[in-house]
Image (cartoon, rainbow, N blue to C red):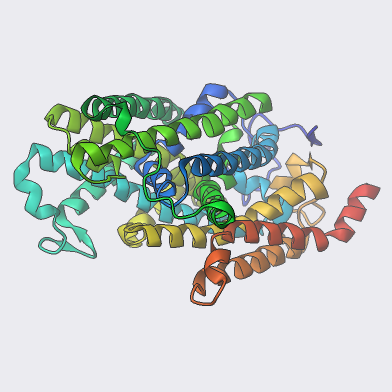
Length: 490
């Protein structure tokens, strides 16, 4: 049982230090989200172009279909369990991810995980906006064929993106900012619609292809089975690690959403239905749909937008592509807009509001030219591995501190005080053990990713998140022995 040693106030308490709080970072007045809202959150996270491409790529690893499904189920099962661990402290206290990190990193040191997670969210925000804009490109070219030449980067483009691509990207950039600006209630209503809407289109697309090809054309192996017996085990483990890495971002800051849960039981139910159940169903639907593109179109297509574009109906193309666009906007807002909004606001609560933090992320997402980070499978995996190396240690430190060091005891008021006598003041607001654990975990985890040419490093790079999380957890636990002893005496 989580023990809150001071009740969360209904609004920022008068004695909360303004350098540590604003209306967005303070404990919530009310927690209203039920299980469906959490399910819809995960649907928005999974049901995107990126989710489709990632799930489809796993079935092309050279494994038998049952092995891929087993890897998917194990991977998403791990994500489910880890999300429950992250959810509990924020749901119990009503504070977002960067604030609960003050328990481990110190009231000022928590800016370290906040900035790291915020920068990672900026990268993902740009990537998902690019993927959604590609779907919009399809719609525009179908409706206005004269735009087709402007979709060719070599003829009309700069910085690696076509002129039409720039137009679509910036259009969606503005749309997402407008949805975000309306606040959390509007975002909740938006994501409640997005995830289920994609299922409607996915089942319709699958039904259309089945009518064209028939059930006999379904083949759950999207590529040749090249790994059998014990040789398939490392590939399966790599697939499991890839699933965890894909969800590592929203998993780390899931507290930004679980804080709205009316109860921890509701959050766990939403996680179960939204992760293992939903992800497995979506993955099977993806591979069935993708496998049918071979007999219908003569080639394997793992991009849902490209599949929709082959349909001989303008209405169907527009509806399908727009739905995937909206769904990708949904994941972008929940996973990559809200997180940096809290994270950057946390750095300077009185100068940077929640909305201002989100806009900082939006501007940064353009500057990194995200289309260059997600333009082929090798780059996709490299991006996931690098991000996982930095996210893993933050996860390990947070979980170790909350469950093993502090035994689920949180002094909420002390999260918002700069007093040297505060529980989370440590050394001038920083906890050296957490900083050291994060640094060690990140450096060791990212090394195999950057040194893939060295024998054995390519395999180790697949597990960057696990390496970082494990080392962060272990180093933090080993360096907090005196703190644990003091807590036992207290």
